[in-house]
Image (cartoon, rainbow, N blue to C red; front, side, top):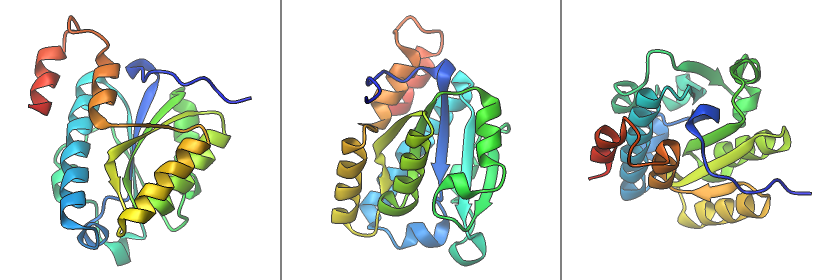
Amino acid sequence: MTKPISLCNAADSALVVIDIQSTLTAAMPEKDAEQMLANTIVLLQAAAALQVPVLLTEQYPKGLGETERNLLEHLPASAEKFQKTGFSCCAAEGFRSILENSGKTQLVLVGQEAHVCVLQTAFELNDSGYTVFVAEDTVCSRKQEHRFFALERMRQAGISITNYESVLFEWMRDAAHPKFKELAKLIR
């Protein structure tokens, strides 16, 4: 039986930023990379304002570089950072235990590449019982068709494919939210 599709809830969510590193980003189509970075920054700012925990991974940083500087500038001080060589974030030492200890049941995934690290992370977390959301406008791959079929495959597996604005507004739920004016400015 598949899990029912639900809305993102800030109190239950963690944001997982997957391998948005300089060398890897440079290999992406320029417009896709720009969109991924801009939309991820919005979600990082929203996560900080709404106290949504952030977990960030780096795939073999010696070869693929550090996390993009402009993302690091928006990373909440409480963010957890993991290095990995396995493609799924679940392979990173300490990732699963930090996640389990957080008590969060919903995970919003952003990053690259959609058909490798994002997909493998989404499948493993989904199989572990988490409700997984992939913000489609915050993920990219070197080839558009790889991104497209990765999103299709995740959707078929019951993973929610969404976008960064939907996540932002679902986290707030109401224009009366105390952070609404501040966060609504992020998408203008």
